[in-house]
Image 1 (spheres, rainbow, N blue to C red):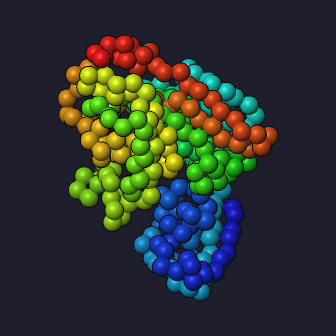
Image 2 (tube, helix red, strand yellow):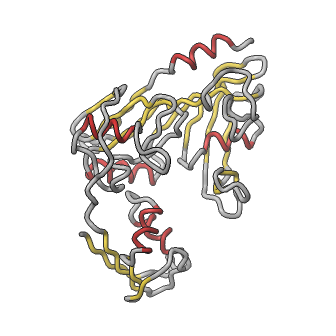
Image 3 (cartoon, one colour):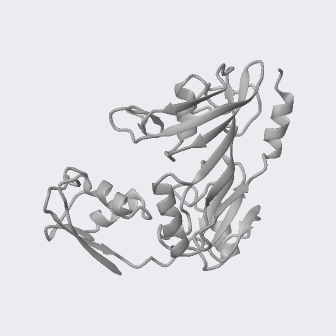
Amino acid sequence: MEQYYCEITHEESGKRIDRFLSEQFPQYSRSFWQKLIKEQKILVNQKESKNNYKLNTGDQVEIEIPDPEILDVEPENIPLDILYEDEDLIIVNKPKGMVVHPSAGHYTNTLVNALLYHCKDQLSGINGTMRPGIVHRIDQDTTGSLVVCKNDFAHNALAEQLKVHSITRKYRAIVHGVIKEEEGTIDQPIGRHPIDRKKMAVNHKNGKEAVTHYRVLERFQKYTYIECQLETGRTHQIRVHMSSISHPILGDTVYGPAKCPYHLQGQTLHAMVLGFVHPRTGAYFEVTAPLPDYFEELLKKLPK
């Protein structure tokens, strides 16, 4: 068990306690802090708190982080496409249709199940029993490079790089419509959709900063092949941003047309390049995940 104590400054006053904690300890998710608050592991002025409590200057916050629970997610012998591996981390090329970590309705056949089999007990425990080693995610139907940490040292280092937006993340996508400009930047906050809580949306009232840079790689009659580079990493960021400028991703029936003219499993979105400062060596490190076969074949089919 780890214990921390802090006093709220004037600059921190007014923030929700769950947001404050997730900013102070970025290696833990906001839902992790909400769970601890509910379990009365977080005290404010020696009293239990609620997730929506807004901090005041001078508040005394006591934090108790319990030891990681014993993992009950089962290892599964699922083949992994490993792009790189060392003592601190492993980078995999995630296939389409694979969920990253167990959640409601997805307790087996996830990337975590496969990693537990491959890495045995060598995964960081920072994100709890359901997300060991997971420092960032990509959607179920998005393919490509994803880094997983084998120890807390690497996890903390990469979480800090994510926090300051210094990790290189370049995606490839095919979008509806022909983009006229050669490149552009979408700087629009993203938050929960005000009506459909299962979706994200450009949300100026309750959203978080989100920036996506894109450039055209090739134009077709009805579509455009682009590269997107993330400056931030919000849920469904590229999908929401491209839809917001009337160029939703081909195959994305959530943020684009309900019907797709091609037989696709979800959006044509691929996390191609992943680069960061290696936590052990301090040198910049980059990997490239090749486009999946279906993506390559689709690019050949699209009429120009």
